[in-house]
Image (cartoon, rainbow, N blue to C red):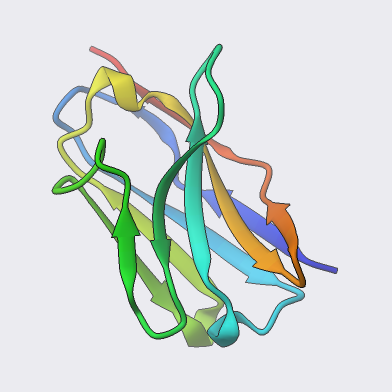
Amino acid sequence: QVQLVESGGGLVQPGGSLRLSCVASGITFWGATMAWYRQAPGKEREFVARITTGGSIFFADSVKGRVAISRDNPKNTVYLQMNSLKPEDTAVYYCNVNKNGYNYWGQGTQVTVSS
């Protein structure tokens, strides 16, 4: 059974930073491409960042230069470091993995950027 558990969200002022974590189980983590998505109120879920098994990284244009994604294979964990946060970054952030053609999601972690 695939499980993804996110943590690290919270309330942060504009310009601040947060590091999100996602612990995965039920998959061969080192062999999986891991991704982060987000969904703001009233909007569709959108791609944020992705890291492949070989360490290739892709970012949405909206977060380039402000976000880093990394993985710790022995810990089955993927991280999303977010800096210079803006109010428009406010959303629920979801961890994602695709296994055998099926997308799995965590429960999400809320990030709120507000003064």
